[in-house]
Image 1 (cartoon, rainbow, N blue to C red):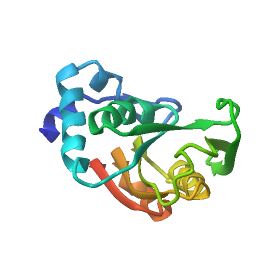
Image 2 (image 1 turned 90 degrees about the vertical axis):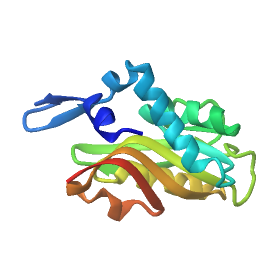
Image 3 (image 1 turned 30 degrees about the vertical axis):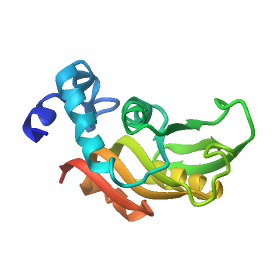
Image 4 (image 1 turned 120 degrees about the horizontal axis):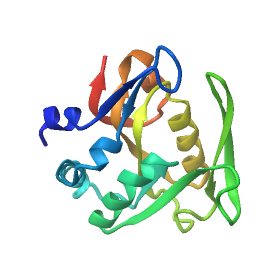
Length: 175
């Protein structure tokens, strides 16, 4: 995978969603089928021999990367959703954001009640780590275990890695 091409495919939008924030917009990466495919192939090569049971994607951009990776690996995909979006019994975890609170949930039987299922958690961005931390707590509630968390972009200067209780694989690291 050519990291320079991957980096160039991500648009930076200054002062979004508020002044002082440089938003890393992945929609431009998604619009480039060649780069998007290279990214999924890169992740497939990394995980194809790791005996992973499921990919769990964080609402909502984790779905974009997690679903095609799960299909390519021939395993199931599990969405971790914002509260009120899942139709069956769920576990919930609330967590703090810099501007309030949020809640995530996962179906209680998300991994078919398979104890010790090996999970890869995926999202587009690791910032302060609160969302990933909450997702790992949810997955642990089901009896499964996150063996690694994937982030396309890691904003290392925000120290989110300290809150993620799993191995981390990030492709682009912003210091």
